[in-house]
Image (cartoon, rainbow, N blue to C red; front, side, top):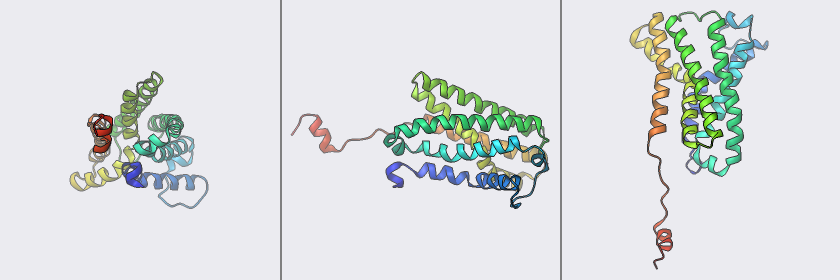
Length: 221
């Protein structure tokens, strides 16, 4: 099934999302009055609206978006791909706009400084731009451009998953100063965008017909 529908990449993307999805779900449970699974954050308790929007949209965007990278599934279910795309455009904008709101109007997270503040503003704004450009491209039926911008948007939206690794490695290598932590978090977006650009620019495989089919098409016996 995995090879038939090309699910290896979606499964890998979902695995990358496990830590932020778990943390976000635990945050929602706590904000709704449930048990405290992860450390409480006073920034969100008094004004939970933006963080709820961010978590819900992020979970939808990460998990549903991963399935858009299954070429076999897309070919067999083109209607699903279009409907899911509309949901993802809205969810992606929800992720980016709520991220901007949290950055601008909520107190800063402990051990984060100016570098991370400006990186969050830049990459959240970049995600909005990618989504708008992607939607604009598909409206004029430019599939190639649409694909490129939506891959970039997804890469930016999945930054939290990569940060779970870069923050740990960065802390071990460069220490836990505010600047070092900001840089280790910021590099996650750079890594994701680099992978996205590679995926966009790599040559696409062409399906090859069996030799018997080529013979028949060529009119030879």
